[in-house]
Amino acid sequence: MTHPTSPNSFHHRKARTVSTLERLPIPGTADDLRLETPGGPVHESVLDAVGSSPLVRLRRTAAHLSAAVYVKLEQNNPGGSVKDRAALWMVRRAEADGSLRPGGTIVEGTSGNTGVGLAVVGAQLGYSVVVVVPDKTSREKIAVLRAYGAEVVVVPGGVPRHDPRHVHATAVRLAEEIPGGWLANQYDNPANPAAHRETTGPEIWAQTGGRITTFVAGIGTGGTVSGTGEHLKAVSGGRVRVVGVDPQSSTYSGGDGSPWAVESIGHYLHPDTVEDVWPESYHPEVLDEIVTFSDRDALLTGRRLAREEGLLVGGSAAAAVSVALREAEGLGPQDVVVVLLPDSGRSYLSKNFDDDWLRGSGFLEEGVEHPVRALLPDGALDAPGPIALRADLTVREAIEQALAEGALGRTPLAVVLPRQGASRPHALGDVLGATTLAGLRGLVRDHPEVAGVALREVADPPLPQVGVGQDVDEAWQALGAAPAAWVLVDGRVAGWVRRARLEQFRTPEVPA
Image (tube, rainbow, N blue to C red; front, top):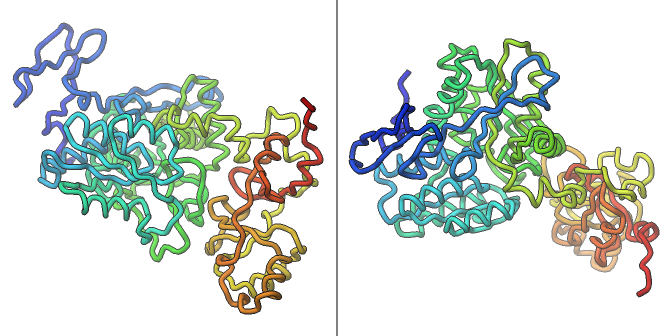
């Protein structure tokens, strides 16, 4: 099978195995040594260390399964993620075709990992790097980017694609404005899937001796699952089953496009986006199936992997494992499942592995004596969340809807993005503000002309949020001066609680 030019053409050869120290000649670099000793390979550049990540079998979490489940640890790449592969390939291709010239600047819009990969490559090859990231990117990733010398531009994540503040739009603009700027554009760059077709896929096939029967990977830009899957399909004659992993609300799997918590996976869609454009790096025809996961499953699986397998991995990696374990339930001892784990959990310590963050977001309920849930009536969080009013309704229409849904005078009402067919409860990121029926009626009474104004123009700011498993004292402190707070379950607005209720049950302050 013929594939596009490999990075081998650009001096990216891997060290071959030798029994003794040996000088390996490399075209164009006569003085370089490529050494491999019993202790491991010796590389002349950090770029030569990209790839060749290990496979590790899951022993405890998969002990109940007949099939063997292996994970491919892409965190072993120099930049700490699978994106080092695509970053190197994209840069080498750009150098070859002249679109990136010496002294140029690499620009990319990314959730973090591709930016780190590009920063590693840029540092080694002498390019400046500018990375545009959405505001939900973990602070650890941003810190790593800056540590490598990249300039980081943080923009709002929840905006439509045509908005000039969008990650991609900002990256395009900067690449045009910066002299010598080159946009990597991992979403549509054919070098992205090619990197995996030429490296990741062959590695997995060789590591399993051709015994792999199922490949599981998350869908982000689509390059990893597409390129790896294409190779495995080709060499196996179509025998290998390729499973894509996607958040429940991602549009790849038919979701409503609303936000989710796990980073670097799925396809978000703002309801104001005119056309849902998928990346050209994603080749959906390669996948046999797309399986969805919940944020809670992914986050708790990540904690389990750390504590039972000694594997500290990122949220998208944990999501892939959660799906793989489900998929392997019906497989037999002849089956070999390989799960690609994109990165380490070290980039998410302040979120995925922080008990306070997990409780405050409604993902963790254990370990607290007096949780918020205990203050709420039975079944209060079983309904589809608080009454939600679309932000594009007029004030008059909002009052009519609130009355039709049985809203009480001062019950908090959520003002949400006008998402077609939105799943309930609403994602916190879709909640733009709050209001009450009494407040809207009073506004129209005092200012009749407001009746025809869009609700988003008169809504109050969003309420503070507390997690269903959060300690009552912490929840009370989170309210500040607000009269109430949204209650989150799995990162979604499932209910609300009044300040007076929290005040009633919080621990009394002891006088000094």
